[in-house]
Length: 370
Image 1 (cartoon, rainbow, N blue to C red):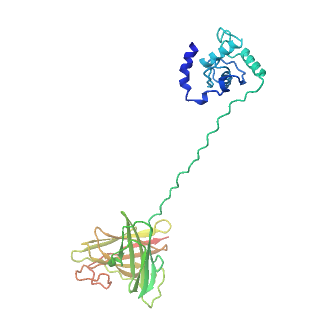
Image 2: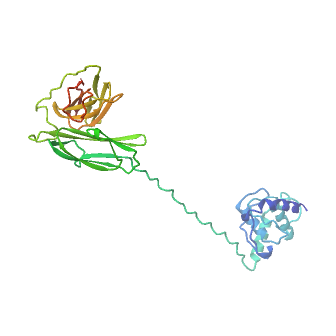
Image 3: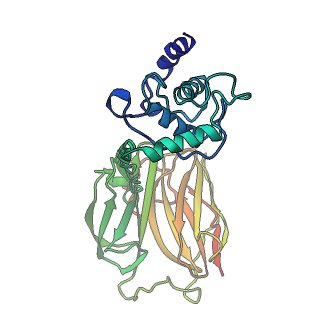
C-alpha cells in the first residue's frame, strides 16, 4: 500500500515533463532494454547509470515500475521497483540494501540483468531521440543612420573668396543650404539693406561694384544659427588685382586718430590678437562697442599696411557688434578701424561716401605668424 501512496504523490510532480518518462513498447511490457551497468547503485545515487537502470525497469511489466520515471536519481520509487524486480526474478526478497542487497543493484542483480538481455531473442530498439528544435533565426538590429549635419555655403563667382576685382565688375553671389527645415535667413554687412532671403539655395547678381564689399548670410535652424561670409576686394581699373593683397612696400595706409564727439563713444577690439599657423585657428573676432546704438558704421580694412577696402557694415547694435573672420594661412598683419555716422539726415547709409564720422575707433592689429 505504501508504494501506491508514493505513486499518487509523485505523478503530479512530473506530469508536465515528458522527458522524465520512458517510452516502452505498447502495453508497458514485452520488450527488453539492456542497460550498461558497472557500478554499485543504491538509494541516493545520481548518475547516468541510474537512468540506464530506470529505463530497464520501465520496460518491465507495469507492476514492477508503474511510475516509469527516468530522472537519473535513485529515489524511493526506483528502490521499490528494484525490490519488486529482485523478488520477481528470485534474487532476494527481504532484508535491506545494506544487509541482503534488497533494493540495491549489486553484482548479483547486474548478472541477472545481463543474463536476461543475453537470452533475449531480439534486440530492443531504444526509443527515438526527440527531434532537435529549430535554431531561431537571429534578426540583426536595424542600422542606425546618422543624419547629415546642417551646412551653409556662400560663394562669390563660384569660389569661397576673398576675390580681387577691378572697379565696376559684376559678381554672382550664390548660397547652398543643406536639406534641413530652416526657419529663415538674414543678409548682413553689404547685404544688410536687402533684408532676409528665403531659406533655400539660390543666387543673385550684383553689377558695377565701385568699392570693396563683404557679404554675410546667417540662417537659423531652431535656436542654432549658421553663418558664412565672402569678401570682394575692388581695385582701380588701372591696377591689376593680386592675391594676397598688396604688401607693405605699397603706399602705406593713413589711419586717422580715434575720435569721439557729442554723446557718442566707440571702441574696437580683436580676439585673439595673434595666432600661429598650424597651432591656432587662423581667425579673429572683431568686436565693436558703441553708445548710443542704431547708427550706420563703415569698416576700413588694412592688410599688411595697405588699406584694401571700405564697406558699409550695417548699424551698431547692443550690447556689441561682432564679426568673425578667417584669414589666409600666410604670415601677415591685419588691421581694422570703424567710422560711425550719427546723422538723422543721412538716408543712404550703404553709400560709402558718407558724411563726416561722428566717432572713429582705434585700429587694433590681428597678426598671423609661423
